Length: 146
Length: 146
Length: 186
Image 1 (cartoon, chains in turn orange, blue, purple):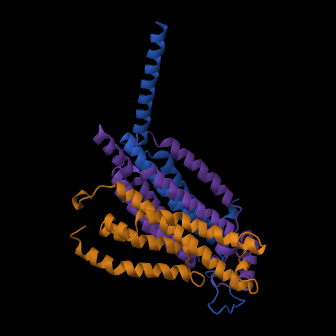
Image 2 (cartoon, chains in turn cyan, blue, brown):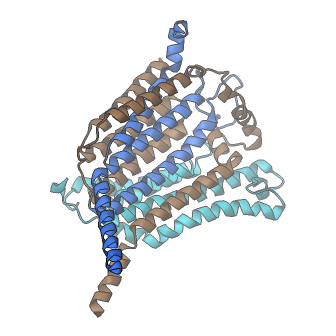
Image 3 (cartoon, one colour):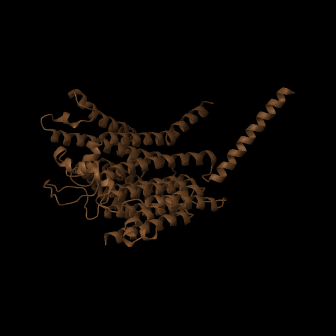
């Protein structure tokens, strides 16, 4: 896509804003529509659009495949780890009171934060690595072919 | 039976009926089309219609989106739509895209192994392969006897 | 008014779905499925499901179209005419549709306040979440706290699907490299 000047310039402008929006959706999910699932998808879209407009190699220099593959597992581990923390306080699995025993509502806030972060990391990892897997097989397509 | 169909009843149920039409369109694509990618799109339509149905059940007329005001001063006269179906469907959408990509990955592998993604061609290739195998086996046993 | 917007959007959805069955170019099918997702996101907003609409717009119109197109570039771009007749599938679809239609006759009206779906656990969620969770967005409160197990399972499913795709599609480069090495040695 070397000669698509408009696409290249706009993408460069938008990728940063998209990532920022993903973080907003991630951490503001308690107060407005959004949460880990949506934020993960938007974050992945930022990487994917960069990969489409520039090149797969360029985006893989920013987020190498091995990091994306590790992100899959880290998110799930963060989620289940949040549940296991409450065992140490003698509470049930995923009982967020453990994070702040004297003020359960605060504990809920911390717990939801951690859990949503886990979801976000997994979803980003999955979507990006699926894109890498598909795009890694495709040979370069010329514009006339479409 | 006829007096069941008042205007009120029809307006109250037309959503469900349209959802049935949508679902049946998806089912029709899945069972009548031979192209694997199109089958996957059909499954997606089928899935979306179920999502719509769930969300329709959670709607309360005159209600609003299930988000409290930021200052948490809750007006007891406000009615909120049912948040439970929203939660179930939100996660289902993300799981749906992951399974769709798995299906697409399988399609890509099928194309690489057989050179086609049409069901008719796949069946005939499979048939040819199995008859070849059978005749080879046959020749082997006959040779042993002789 | 709300009902009419609903019905119009729903009809547009049905039209898009029927257009998918009639289109033979798979590129067009991928685009139509993107249109379908955007329309359903609009419909979800009118049904008060803002969180779901958000997800659908990001996932359906964004990622799924990209994945569909990249799969198309690896397979083929045109559908071949199927040799089978359409009569049996139509008959099956009609019968199932009529049965489902019969099933809806007992259902409560759309948007009715006292319907069974509104009365049990979800009422308790709305009433109790301000004091127990203290998070304005009830959907987040249910998703991450009341039904934390459920969401953990869903995350695990997403993880598993991702691993499945990686197993199916990557590893080609490594295999090629190995084969190259082998052929070089021989």
